[in-house]
Image 1 (tube, helix red, strand yellow):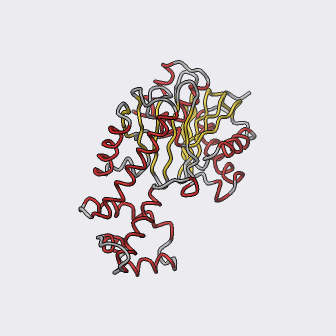
Image 2 (cartoon, one colour):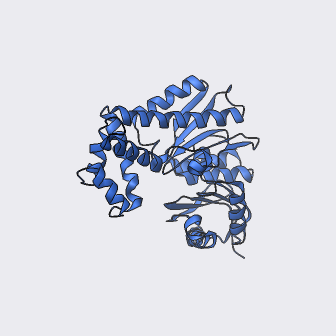
Image 3 (cartoon, one colour):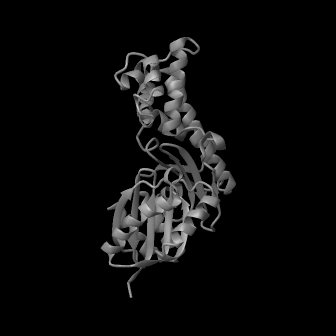
Length: 323
């Protein structure tokens, strides 16, 4: 009969997947990394098939065949119905006795706090916000883009920068240095040339995200339009955090607000300062903190919470990932 670990922790994002096998005492027995997890693009079955390779490698390295509990924090698990569908697919693999699927934003939140209490805003390719309390209450948003009222994220910022540059170039909008800096990123002479290259896919659509750092650099140079876009993102981040805090009745308590994702961890001075300024005005007891720990730590801690692990076990797991 094969050996059983306590927790199989999975953090599966759009670009990469991290897996950790954790013993009851918090010792991390093995880790493994795989490719991205994209059910909308390839289907649930194919996405879980790809995940299976990473899990198998981790189990083999740990010398176990199953876990008591599977704690999976997955990208594209944006709605409860999607979490249920993915949980069913993972349970069918018999990787663990019980399975809990959460949106991957919860992994970043749990990685940044000592106990399951706080709010996290993640701004990477998209933007999302979740909150939780130790009693199990959560706050979340659908995070489906404009369809669900979202604005921001690296992709959205790139589109916004292009929109302003296009209008400035043809006279519909005010002047902005983005008309120069955006096409220069691809060695092109004008905004029109950039629009044409993107439309005809001479520049692959996936490369639009490269315009987001250009937006921030242009804002740093003092361009008013670029700075206004950055300020709008700060407002959106704080709005989401404040609403989540209010839903969880945490506005009157000192509560961590964790900031994660490539945009919020990149050290953009204007954005960081404005987020903290707005948060201090709207939620004075919130404590903003950037999370740079690997999100799989959060998935592991959520799993240890679920199986009732001791504080020492959770500390051992955290020490492993933060060493």
